[in-house]
Each structure stands twice: as C-alpha cells, then as structure tokens.
Image 1 (tube, rainbow, N blue to C red):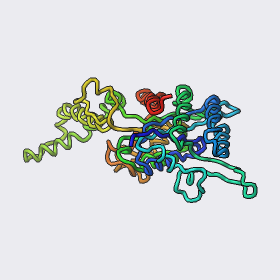
Image 2: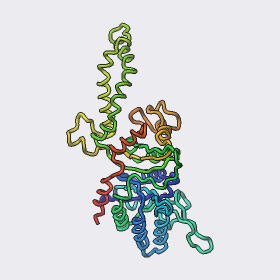
Image 3: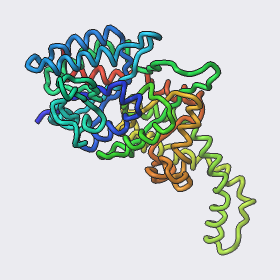
Image 4: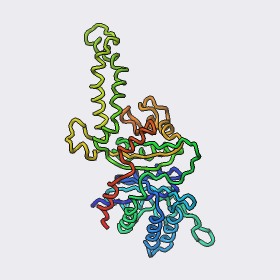
Length: 390
C-alpha cells in the first residue's frame, strides 16, 4: 500500500489547556505513522472564512456535522475581536501507509459516544446535547482531521495558501503586564525521542507545560551537519575546559599504573593543554554524529548541507522568565545529577543522550532559532504539494 499524508489540526482550546503533549503522544503510540511536519498557525480572518465556508458543505449527507465544524472554526479560530491577535492552532502532518484512516480512527468520530476514553476526542474533546431538545449546547472536537483523501486534500490546500502569512512564530493574545520579563526560549527534542514510536516526546512536552509557558512555534526537522556544527559550536570551548578539570587526574592515574610509580597530576598541565583540543574535537564529532547521523570528518561538502538522518522537534516557548523555567524542568545536563522528576532524570541516558536541549539565555535562544530557521518550514509546503497537488 502506498504512503499517504494525513493531518491533525489541534484546536486553540487544547493548546491553551496544555493538552498538546497528550494528543501528540496518542497519535504516535496508537499508529505506526511518522510525524513529518509541525507548524503553529495563527489563523487570519481570511483563513477562518475560507476554512469555515468549506466545512459548511464538506459532508452534505450530514448537515449537522457540517454546521458544527463550520460554526466552531468561525468562533474558536477567529482573531480576538478586541485585540486582533490570532489564536494559536497546531498543524501536525503524519506520513505512512493508510495514514488518513489511522489518524481518523485514533481521533474518533463525533458520532461516537464520547464516554470510553479510547480516542482523542473521548479524552480531550466534548459534545453536550440538551437532554430535552437534543440540540448540541457545547462542542469541542479537540482536533480537526479529514476522513477521506478528498477532505484532507481540500483542507491542506486551504491551509497551504495561508502558511506563508499565518504560520511560524505566533505570539497570540498578549496578556502580560508592563515590566514583565518576557522571554522566548528554544527547546529541541533530540533524536533519542524519535527512533521508535513511544510516549516520550508527548510526555516531555507535558512536563514542560507545567511551567505555564505558551508554545509559540514548532518545527519538525532533520538537522544538517553544517547546522549542527554552527548550533553546537560554543560547546568546543566548554569541552576543553571540562577536560582540564579531570584530564590531569586521569592521566596521572593511567601513567602511574603503566610505569609502576606515582605520577603527580600537578605536573601534567602542559600535557592537558595539548590533549584538551583533541578531546574536544572527538567529543564534538560524537555530538554531531548523534544529532545528524553523519560524522563530520567523513562527510563530503554536499552531504554537510543536506538534511541529516536523525529527527528532532524544535519548540519555542514564551513567557515570564522562560529560560530559567524551562531549564529547571529539564534538569542538569548529566541525567545522573538531575533532580528526581526532571525530564533528563526520567528520560536521559548520559550527558549527550539526555532527551532535550534548552537554550541557556535569551541571546542564545535567538541565535539557535535563527540557525534552525524556526519561523519557516518549506518542507511542510513541499509535502502538501507533493501528496495533494492542486
């Protein structure tokens, strides 16, 4: 069976309620599909009008469903009438065999009884009818999906028209006070979260949600060697300094064992000065290989700029003191030294394979976001155009 591209458009309400991680986790573990794209969308009134107009007649045999979805989009996606700021939704693209059916089944139909918790709408959505009239009084479908190729194609092509203007870094409604220390910080979920279907990525996002920060940008990508070298460039000097903290002692122990007489670590400063760059170069290559799947010293010039073999998800969080809040939840670089309950303690393996990266300052966040070009994602456009040429 040929691969398909399916989507789930997460509504503004579950994003505001920090249900993002739970929804993503459900899709990842209940299907064998690959998450290939993710974008934050701040729908303009033009996008709202076009999408709601399409949904008003997209399933003519079921006029109530059409009315519910069309009305929901007009009400929940439209920019704030007072401030004009958009509401944030999240587009997720999934690729794989029979992807449309699998995404729809995990999401659940609005015609099912939402009581069991088996589907995403069971758990995160709601529909309440008046017990006397049978009219729907409250409707929150949690996500918008398509049940057929025709519907998926139509909705994705509508979204495609507005991605250049409505997607990227979307701040949404501004509810901060004058003088608040508002920061943006970058989180990158590393390749160890994506090598097999698991709850890891979603659970990590759930833990980050405890900070109270908002997600204003996401991007699924494969880092190139050139990107990784620029991104982790400052680590080289850190690795040299770290080596000098332990290198003399370990060299002294090794030499003492080899020669059978004690060697004083204090006399090995010059040796450590020589070895530190070699150690840093080796460890730096290991980091780049882990993040991209390619060892820089073995890459051709062309391979250096191509997308790597490993997957990552970049998330931009915004809020008061965002850098500190994210790094506190993430925990120490070494998972063995991270506090219990922190992300790296729960999901990390060692200093390199430690679940996620987080910026250590607002300045570095801006530098890292620029390297990854978070505000733009031509791959999402390419995927939609490839699978559903209009």
